[in-house]
Each structure stands twice: as structure tokens, then as C-alpha cells.
Length: 364
Image (cartoon, rainbow, N blue to C red; front, side):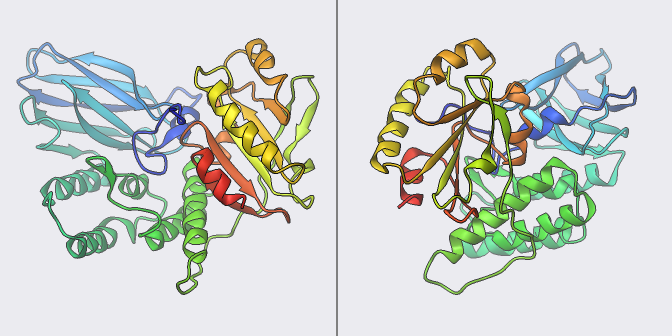
């Protein structure tokens, strides 16, 4: 049975999920990406960003002129973000902090592999990083990869605290595998998270990085090896206050820390895969008797359909009217639906699970 409804196209969230949804400014200031793509005359170039489900969604496009020039302007993001310029299924990533103008130069036949970015220090740094990744041998051994990552950290991340380029590097995929894995590379995640926390405490990327590094450290500390600590402050409670199917607001804090573990579920109840998923969850819930709390956050687009799906579930189900723009999902760094979070009996945010099998293990 397919358990995961949608996957983000990157690590963490590879993405960056949710973040780009909230990163649109309400002002009139724009950023601009312009340049030349030789050999692409009269073709369309597309600007994309990641949506709630981690898919890269087109937000604008422009026609390349007969001279190869193009230009796209968009409202400046409220928080720094990575955008993607696409043509013929190939991509170049562009960091945008605010209202800068970034110039991209490439050619149609080598788009995505040979290009230049200028207009900001971050754009130039991201160009250098992407080219180093392209030059990395496909069969690089673990020692070579570790050396490569140390070098990348020194060049682009150590002194770039709070930089969206650092975030992009941590979420970079090579093929289908992350360049930096939280469990193996937890020190890098913790270091970048600390930089974001100090310099960009209100940036949505900050909570995402912090939660990822904390979760990785807990998994590592759960093993038999030596214990490590990180500088990030652990989050013991992220409250949610939303209405249930009867219209009564239910706070997560009513259940967390009451002597039982509490599971927070994020899903879409009206998704075609939900009935089978809820059957698995019901079996797990019943197997634990009255020794667990389930708090189910639904991000459905239609409240009426959600209510019909929720009314027969034996646990607390609440509806988030913000749907895919859910602030609660951002705070919890939700990158895949469904996603599960486990609070211990004494109220500590203990673990994140991506499948019911993983959730079952966390509740043992």
C-alpha cells in the first residue's frame, strides 16, 4: 500500500517546502532574474519554486528574445528563498534575498551545466558550489565525499551564517541521494541551524533546520555510541489550537504531557490513500488501548468533506483552514504527507516518523 501521499523533491524537505508558500511579500518591490540563453531564441524560460508538496511549480515565464535575452520580475520574498530557472527540463538554481537583480548567462545546449550567475555574492557563491558538485566523480568513495563536504562547509557555509545558500547546500541532492545526510552530517546541520537562529530567528528555514538537527541528534544519542550535544535549544512543545469536527477548538497542549505519549498526525483525510492509512492507524491506536493520544491535523481543502471523513475516527481530529498554507505545518517542518510526531509521556518532542511502521517502533 502506498503510505506516503506526496514526497518533497529534496532532503529535509528537500526541500523547502512550505517555506516558499509563506515567503511572498505583500509590498510592491520586485526582484529580477534576467540574462541571455544563447541558442534558445523564441523559447519559453520558466521561473519555479517549491510548493507545499515539494513539487517545483511554475510561477512565471518569459519568452527568450531573438537575441537570446530574457527577463522575469516577481515580488520580493519575505524571507530569502531559492528559485529555479527552467528550460527544456533543465534547471539552474538562483538565490534571492530581497529586491536584487541576478543575471544568468548560459546556452541552450549546456543549460544547467555551464552557466554564470552575477548580481549578488550569494548568486556567485551558489554558481561555484553547483559547479563543484557537477565536477564531483559519480563513484566518489565515502572518504572522498567526507573530504568534499568539509571543503564545501569551509568555503560556503562556515562564514555564511543565515545564508539561503547554506540551506540550499544542506538540501542538495545528487541523483536521488542527499549530499548532506542529517544522521551522518549532524554537525553541519547544527552549525547552520545555529547561524540561522542567531541571525534570522523569524525565518521559516530556521525552525526547519533546528528541528532537523535536534531529531538527528536524538536518533544518534539513542544508539549505543558516545553521546553528543548540540548548541540548538530543544523545542519541548509546539502548540496547535484548531477546531474539531464539532467546531470546538482543541489545543494540542490539552493532551501533551498528561502521562501518555501523544502522536501528532499531519495528513489530508480526503486523499484517496487516507482510508487505508487510517485503517493502519486505527489498528495501532487500538493495540495501545487507552495509553496513547492521537491529535490529527487535517490540511484538507474542503471542510465539509473533511468533516465526513473525520467523524468516525476514534481520536481527536482538527481542521486547519489554512490548508496547504498551514502555519502549524511550517512550525513542525512538515515535508511529507502524512507525517507523524511523537511527544513522550512527560511532554518532550521525542521523534518524527514517516510511516506507520516507524511510528509503531517509536511508541514501543
